[in-house]
Image 1: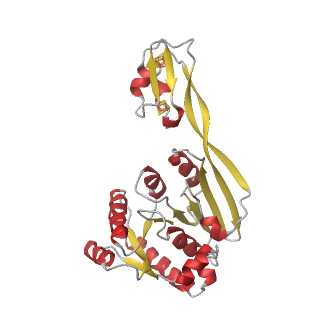
Image 2 (image 1 turned 90 degrees about the vertical axis):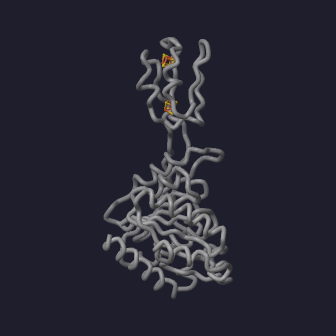
Image 3 (image 1 turned 135 degrees about the horizontal axis):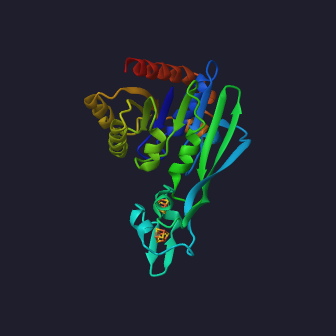
Amino acid sequence: MIISVASGKGGTGKTLVATSLALSLIDNNKIQLLDCDVEEPNANILLHLALSQRKRVYVPIPKVDETNCTYCGKCAEICAYNALAVIKEKVLVFPELCHGCGACSYLCPESAITEEGREVGVVERGDSGNLELIQGKINVGEAMAPPVIREVKKYIEPANIVIIDVPPGTSCPVVEAVEGSDFCLLVTEPTPFGLNDLLLAVEVVRKLGISCGVVVNRVGIGGKEVEQYCLREGIPILSRIPLDRNIARLYSEGIPLVKGIPRWREAFLRLFQDIKSMIIDE
Ligand code: SF4
Ligand code: SF4
């Protein structure tokens, strides 16, 4: 079972929910937590696992052998990302724009293009008992998050309960991380900003055909807009976490919610049972 935990923007408590869910379930289940928030993976700030395995992630970029090149321009024409330009007798490659799709090397009529790897990030792995953490991290200044997320997701073992901490927002990395999930939990705040980002996130998961439910975090800071929207749209609110100084303190000290306040474990077990029932009903 794959459950992704997403939110329309950062700082809504997505990692708090993902780690609490994982830690609530480890007594009786094998859990894989995939931290796909590759710009800033922070699940391990709460989990404290030793990440003993490390694998670099490369994107294949074109390398042009100009002794065979006729400067026909076909490679630049075919590249959907403008990562190649042919000017007079020179082929320019812009590695940061290249998505490594391989189209240019495949279609070059002179077989003048080979590929070389460009490192874009790393995947790290560690475990303890029933809990396995796999986290992706892109290099500083790197924009190419999807290849790192794809590498993280290769570790998924379908027999396990897999929880994916999705990058914030609604762009390509989010789609890459959420795709293939059985269910998506959307974490939001009860504020107009929270509602706005929730609307966008719901649109993405609906387009992907994935059922979703909402966790409202910091209940008490805003109004009823999020609750009213969910009611109107038939989106279940599966959990409510109050605005609470203790919860914020535990997070800032790197203490998981379900360890700092053990009664929350019951709430997350109930949340899991609700998700499971919804997946079965589907
Ligand atoms: S398609 Fe091949 S031959 Fe044509 S410009 Fe590109 S590298 Fe050169
Ligand atoms: S591999 Fe794909 S994205 Fe990269 S330069 Fe070639 S055609 Fe463009």
